[in-house]
Image (cartoon, rainbow, N blue to C red; front, side, top):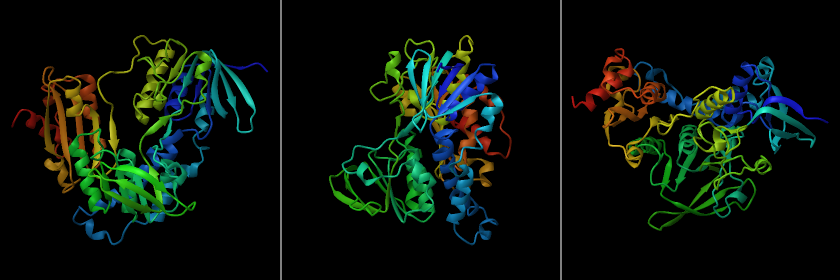
Length: 469
């Protein structure tokens, strides 16, 4: 049979794939999208959305307990079964039928199966029953296959059937004892949620602090709260062996501390939260003369094009530039503009992207930390103010840990990085993002007057601190 003809074929219907398919279809192109699992992808069903549903009850309860008058109304603890039911509502019980009608509305054809390149602008889709369908793209093929949780090469770990983010965010029973391997955002968020749900939590990491890519103060504040929750933090450790003699039985993790001391951690489940690996295997890149890099990612230029191929694009986690849902959507926007012929469509190049870790305190950051700015050769000065130093903090986040920092490029007089920690500080971050992307002079920010008594007055405190008031 002859191949089905389209202008663009997108492999992967996660957030990045959905966005680019929608943008191109709305512009009048004929678009096909290929998905082997769930339309809307990892973030909607196994990561961003369910994890936030898990952390929200505990954080809301903690905030209410900080507010006199409301605190007295709190008479119980978290209803874990109810929280899990709400989580199931958020992820639609792992059913993507509510995610697909928009495809029909946009005129996008959905092919269920695994997509692979077979030649220039050619894709073959293999369904679960083994049948195949050939697609041909007149203009472009877009790879948006995302990433999968990485399992560290610890002897016995893979054989112990560890959970990944998928099992940890969709479980219907909270283990009594659980260990998380990894002290980045996933491990910290889930450790926070599980501890508030009553589990005995151990958090294991090779780094000597939590959230090692963020400002040190952020990791210190998150660690302090987690210890208050009863989390057993084992930092700077090496895992030497994992044992699970009986399937579904207890897990024993052998740990070597920084001082060489050895110990064991016994849990009911172990969760790997130690990074991601790209889903580049089986994409047929060799059929078009391309290949992943040494880490498995598909390298792209600032137009999101793969190598010298002017018709092949890779967006989202697959290219390794920023493993964040919102960055994948942004890349989809840029790549769509390139495909549609917009002149000058390029990925921005202004430092690390926006990121939020939904722990307590919440850690919201954009651009450089003080350390990465100096590594980049910038002459910077960082200033800090307490998050609760505004009048608005008397009503939200009073008594909660938090620090706000801006990192200023002294040569240009502009902000190149910002980190906010505290209650719901992710909602405070966008002003910093706009300031950094736009290169607004810090002197000009005095004219952007924040409302009283809102927490946005943190900007006034930061400007005062920068000028030495």
